[in-house]
Image 1 (spheres, one colour):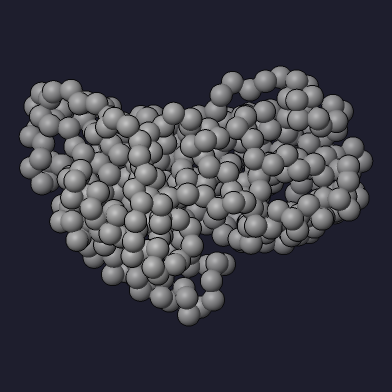
Image 2: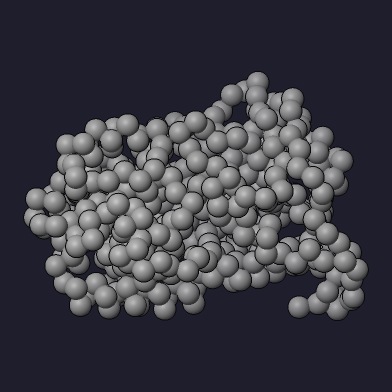
Length: 405
């Protein structure tokens, strides 16, 4: 790969840095892209009260520019203020590329980029909102909005083939605009199983089923609780360990009390590797997904998965090899969990296969290289970088601050 004469200025915009794929990928790119080639800034809002901030939890010290009025909820007055704030920041920073993540940040960020005359625009779809989130009328509005925005975007990134295909089928963008870039991550070293269970206060001799993620409607914590009821009734000595929280946390907490002590609520944890180290398998019960980072992390930890076959889940979990995929059905999920809990040999085989598969496909270095290639292609196409030229060094911007309107 040739070197550029001048580092590219990249402005990354994420609505909020709650624990999940967009935050993970943003942090990985902020830390992984070489500073002599890219001068990056990350702009984001604040998480909701029932969410954990990824930066605080897993990336302390990361330089972040907070936009006070940018966040999860649609509030027209705040959204206009966020648009004005981002436009002003773009005019000051003068980025070569604005790279947006998530729907709201993608809409506001790309409109701001047009108003500030930013030449390069990239958007990542970490999933989509076309199924399971909103009523049909709202979905049509979202689809129309994304279709319009795609016309003014240089490059569209999808985290999986299924995500890309769904978006194209909805008329969002052209095939030539898309690059599939799966998530990439790494895990800290795993503690020994018994030490992990002791730290989490889980029974040493039980089989442990872990869930890691937000407790929101699309994730179906009600289905998670129903599966737990069936499995606990069928398999003696099993504990469900739930790592995460969200707006449906109280609802799951009520179900957990009814199943106590077989369901343990761990809340958000910075040491997610401890949860995987303590687990015999992981469970995902969602109605819709992009490409779940929790399943990638589980694979890196050598833990097989039982998951609903939605979104790009099948691109992470190889059915029958690294885990089991099912319909969005409580009984199907429960029977798959029971099968793996009762078959130690199969479970261990799938865990070993999961480690080999995910390390090869979903490493952090691969994610950084893929996105660097997208940026480089834009730079070469626009003549910002000559082929095979030397370049001077450049560092990251100094100081984090809040942009408040």
